Length: 408
Image 1: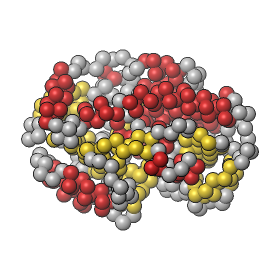
Image 2: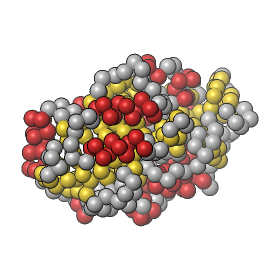
Image 3: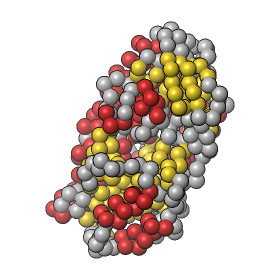
Image 4: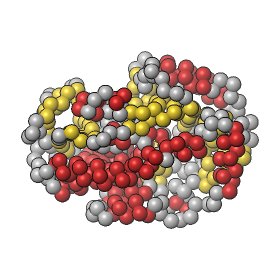
């Protein structure tokens, strides 16, 4: 297979930005370009298919840390990522009235977290796409609509481009994966609502402090304002049950759900809800987990959120980058036996993913405590927490990636 035809990678179909009347506006993510880079370095000929027409202008911040760091270092990208990083160094927890309670240092972008990088999602995607452009073919403004595989390859039908045949197809297309739906089955068989919903939108003005993220909680609800390199972002995170009528493309439903959830909340929330009704740049989705018994079926495999979504509360971007490298390495190790390679990839990467999935309930309790007592306990723990020390986060996970032979 190595050096054969091509590997099709359906890039991250991230329903990240919604305009009234237009449904979802998808944009490139981290998984497809990273996988394409490493596949090309191993002698494959990757084609990345991205539903978006190109890179977009906004993006919520994500953290690059742990197992992703040796991968981006081997790609020579850490300086570019640092240059595009946010300037935030602390979280400022607020009382229900808006009064500051305590300040918590963030490990990323600080002297104590030299290894970690917080970067806007779109900036991360831009850096990764730039690294992969000379290594791979990119098909923007397209998607896969049908797949038919046999023992020798996969016939792929596109929405716009002519049909083509590939040796492998990798679905790196996010929580609402098209590849997973076409090959593995309906979304509701694998996606589980985690009891939270999240919405983000631009603030429309700079934050008051470029280095602090403001966190405001009431029972079961969080509102935050992130400076985001001068393009401040608002996030609403709130508890709610699964809804049979939930549609991740229905912007009118999303506005209604957020407005209902935050009715009667003080601080700046009434002003922010007014902004919510006017913005044309809104992301909304259920916080969910994806669990499948196997991440591959024949010559089709899944990567990142499509296979094992950590949703809002995990290390999704970092694990996606690490997983892309692992997948490419395993395919290169046994180019004539993709079945064994895909099995090794899942075994190795699931060891990183599963512990984080098990910590979902704790993460939710810290972000959006259910009760006032829970908020008080979380705030007290934050006051007593030590300043992050300048040590790598989970050195064992860094080592596990390094041992796979990450090299430029």
